[in-house]
Length: 311
Length: 166
Image (cartoon, rainbow over all chains, first blue to last red; front, side, top):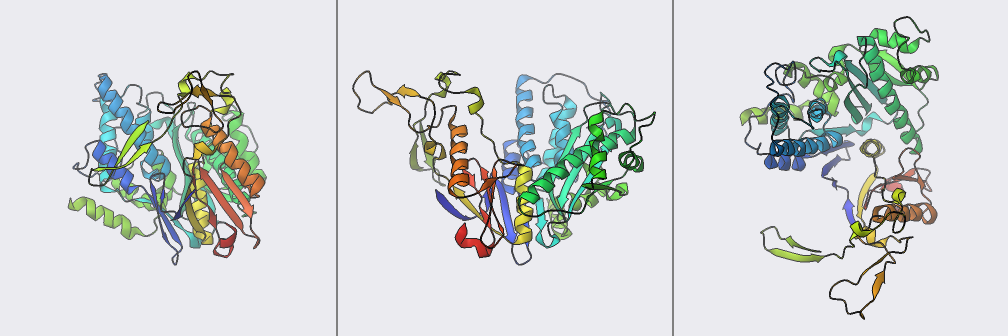
């Protein structure tokens, strides 16, 4: 057994601690720099957001649907795999973009490859971004956010995209951006499904914390920007319009009743999970990003922005 | 299997040699059980939750790397292999594995079972019911000692007052 002292590197992630300020930062700068050089993007022009609002990921206009060659497909698959590791480990800010890329793994189109290049350009300007955990927030501040992009604008199969984020205080511990398993008939239904997924993660997080000796007695707030979904979850009634919803998603009702979670409304502009469901413009994206990554210290973000514009 | 580790300047550094078994020759039911080839790994969500915990409680976080982890694991099945090249042995001799080798199918499973057993039976830890790669123990000061495990990388975490116990 080798004792390597204080943990600084964990599976390609770097841990930086400031014990007087009680902050812990987790990033993958070296991993991302290597990724950029492996995919010849070290001199690309930095982009301010990971996905373009229309053309690249939006409607399929201009998508020539030409089949990629085997070599192109393999290189695309390798790139998406590498991006997925960053997404899973430290980068919720690219989760939505990478989820889109992953749906093109089998037969990437020109649109997918353009979107992949866009993610690389975004990373090029933000290599040092990562997660920040502020210890001073305490551990009893578990909080969840959920959102959905109904009928996933521009998705061929009209399925909605669920996005959710679970944080301890300002520090993000879990997140996801996934296509829903069925077509939602309404915005409310899609939001309801996303909220149920977030609830599952909250219950699990409360469990791990309780194993660590922190028992949460209060309900964990779950923020959602859709009032009708909150109504649906808090209400036991089955109406004509909601009777088709699969019973598995009504799981959230019981958890609200037993006090595990409490649903709260939050306006869309402040909803970090919004960035996990659809491409956003630079203005909204850059405003939500600090909440997504937990870096309340915006200097760092500005610094990396300046850095990217100077190049 | 040979691997030459290069120094930073590109000159050959240390020569690394590792004996590996040819796991692809193993047959299910005879040399391994299908259910015994996977080992759990720590979830990233668990790891980040622990990092939040460490930051909030101002815990120490260490890094322990178990050298040649898989070679420490004992194997239940009887596995025989050809005598490696360069070892003097009478003709017709085969080797029986006492411990796992890199390359055999059950190595990760056997290693996880061994280290979990040591943490639980010998050191008094308990595996979390939410993640089987997170081990927890209450210290004498009443705080929690955490022991998350990424295969052979361990990240023991403890409060400053519990340093002797970790």
